[in-house]
Amino acid sequence: MMSSLQSLRQIISTFKSIPKFDRTMQHLKVISAGNGKVHCEMPVHDEHVNLQGGLHGGMSATLVDFVSTCALGTCENPRFGVSVDLNVSYTAAAAVGDTLTITSEVLKVGKTLGFATVDIKNQDGKLIATGRHTKFLSH
Amino acid sequence: MMSSLQSLRQIISTFKSIPKFDRTMQHLKVISAGNGKVHCEMPVHDEHVNLQGGLHGGMSATLVDFVSTCALGTCENPRFGVSVDLNVSYTAAAAVGDTLTITSEVLKVGKTLGFATVDIKNQDGKLIATGRHTKFLSH
Amino acid sequence: MMSSLQSLRQIISTFKSIPKFDRTMQHLKVISAGNGKVHCEMPVHDEHVNLQGGLHGGMSATLVDFVSTCALGTCENPRFGVSVDLNVSYTAAAAVGDTLTITSEVLKVGKTLGFATVDIKNQDGKLIATGRHTKFLSH
Amino acid sequence: MMSSLQSLRQIISTFKSIPKFDRTMQHLKVISAGNGKVHCEMPVHDEHVNLQGGLHGGMSATLVDFVSTCALGTCENPRFGVSVDLNVSYTAAAAVGDTLTITSEVLKVGKTLGFATVDIKNQDGKLIATGRHTKFLSH
Image 1 (tube, rainbow over the protein chains, first blue to last red):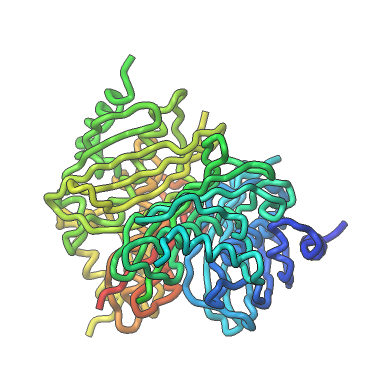
Image 2: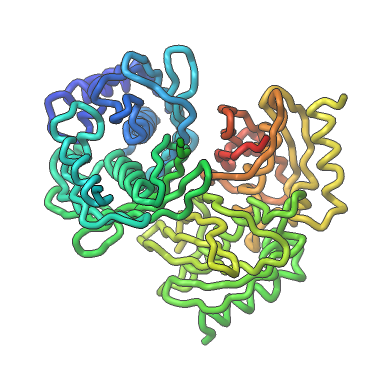
């Protein structure tokens, strides 16, 4: 049986060759995953930034969405589901060449709802963005 | 002098050939734009959905980010800026083949902060997602 | 059988004599209620403001919570429930002597989740705050 | 010169005798405060709960608003200001007799914006609610 870490790495390894929105996550490297916590790294490339060269707000929101979904998937009896609410606060800029660390932690998993938080920092530990994601978990 | 509508269409027309995150917005058609309101349409393609075939939560968040930025850009003395806070509630699914209408309305533009709301509906008028975006406006 | 409007007015009329947090809503006048929409008015009193004399952010958040709950209660097969997510954007100040209009509209009621939006304006129609509320609906 | 801890305790000690919304915070005990972090405790009383006896969603939102404002006030060059955005996720119920711990941590203080996060837990360490608050800081 594969660990959460192996599963996530395998799923992400398929993203570069699929024509879906998850392709935006293809450069995400999962460093550790388990027990409701996921730690990733990602170098900022051209494809992640806006016309002004800063990490795109939609990219940060997608990282909050995806990495929190990964964290919820590492819980006991992992269940996937659909998004209910997502929020992001943007605290600093990041640019091409920066390396982001993205960490997510599950706050609560109930019968039908899961909550997780995500922090996005740069290589100096500066907080770039932080958000929360609430999901409806299917059985 | 170009109108807001012409300007937005011209900017978006460049997205298919630039290797930036804004490329995710390349299929957005601006129907009308002016006085703090923007109305767009977008067919859902493979590149907008997740592995299960539903409109990706990160794509919806990116639409909230981008179309609200467009709406803020149609105000008198348009000013661009950086994201402060963004939130999205996900109320229904959408799939490849659906055509989304995305409307944004500016709620307030002050000296340094702008607020706008965004609704994403399908071709039947069903609400798919709704969100708000707060931006810090530079001079 | 009482209408939504009568029920809401009756419930709120009890708030002045109960030592619960809902007492903060005792000055709310329901103007109309039905089919997922509620329209209220409330004069701003001393008890609603902060030390600087402005409408308290917690009071605005409580109005978003309560009036959206009322709106969800006016739907067919009204069901109450517990809060999942709530957000508020603060767009302008209000002070003692202002009269607020608070309107809420249900965005979606599903099997287990309900979403509603709330706008708080002053007597001049200026937007003071706007928010959304997601609730888990019990049976 | 008073410390942040002394100042906050003194301010809160006045709340029981002022007819303002801050009165809802009168039972808050500040345990520690400084360097962008505040730790409080509060017993849940009748005046904090809804008609069903659970901690009121508006009360939790007010705790997020107030305790984050306290945390921003403990930073170097403390500046107060006005709310921009606030959000809360509700993860578990609390009732009269519970003792809450409310902790807030500043995420970022810039030239004009401050961001802080707040966790509300019960006496068993269970997360009751969590939120973020963005403020516009005046000079």
